[in-house]
Amino acid sequence: MSKQASTVVGIDLGNHSVKAVRLQKKGAQYVLARVANIPANRESATGALVTEDTIATLLKQAASLVKVSGADVHFTINATNSTVRYVELPQIHLDEMRTALKLNSTTYLRQNFENYTFDACPLDQAAAAALSGKAAKGAHGKIKVLVGGIASSELVLYFHASRRAGMKPRSMQLAPISLINGFEAAYPEVFRTQAVALLDIGFLSSSLTILDKGAPLLTRSVPMGGKQITEYIAQMTSSDFPKAEAAKLKGETDVGDALTRTAVTLIREVRSSINFFEKNSDQPLSKVYLSGGSVRSAAVVEALSSDIGATCEPWNAAQGLSIELPAEQQEIFTQNQSSFAAALGAARTYTAAATTLAAAAPAIAPAAPSATATAVKPPKAA
Image 1 (cartoon, rainbow, N blue to C red):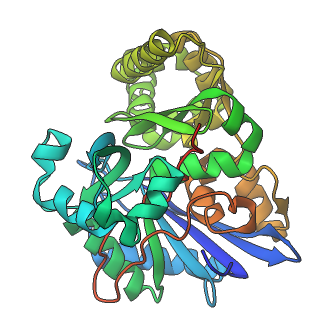
Image 2: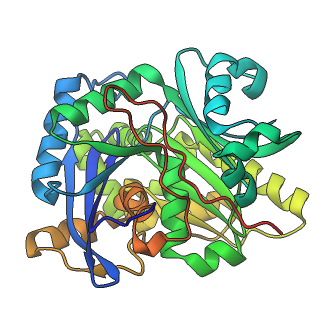
Image 3: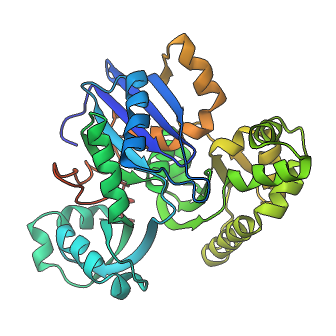
């Protein structure tokens, strides 16, 4: 990004709530100046936000609390139909690469993604620079690329809802990418030197990313989230959803049993991914860093550590930032800190705290979104 904005807003369009953060530049640093956590209205069957108008209403509420006027606004999307892949692609210009993915997803991704919008980021700094300029025309061979994709209809829905709410989004990222960028900004030394896993437990789905010394090696999405855990507790305790959610967060019930019975697929995916990494890299994974609303519960964290068989702990996406929130927002942030990880990651990608991250992601076109922004830093060449 050629010029850093004085104010950056990150908005997480989650399935359970819309989270927003405002980072304000003070001197050479940014401070966390405002936050918002707006409960979302969902269809009971799918958890999806219903209409453009519904989303716009939620965004207006968030915008009024974080004061988006004059800020660069960056969105992150936690979509159950999104995909993040690491594949080898021909060394062609990035614009051509996006078009090729859109028209030939089966060829390049070995899966048919019809009516999807893709973005790509080479996992090599030199290649990233070359493929965005004229040098791409003379390149040969293949390179490792991070690919993000989302259904075009959903992307257009979010874009127009944001415009209806009076915002001009500068970028739209997928949540797993925002989490990678946010983790680097918050824990730069761990990011650069260790092998770790980022496990984000959303409301309807969860994502797992394994990083090895700054290089993202795999990202998995599992259609299981905190909603299933709470519903099981509600069924076992004959209580309604809000009471079961409170019991889960306070550890007033057998959370371990609920997690074991509802999160079988998630636990299996995490275990197999860690085992695959450790077997192929011949090195241990140091820790699993957790985010998402459910990990506010110490009982959930303890149960995850036991079931996964690895040390798990929540991470603070505001690490390294000064907190200068209004008194009425301080408690909201403290109680829901793990839920703000994706929103903070989207914002910190474009602040002084993240100057080593990727340059500005592809901008959203005025009429309609042209690409989802991957916006992840290519690891340094060996």
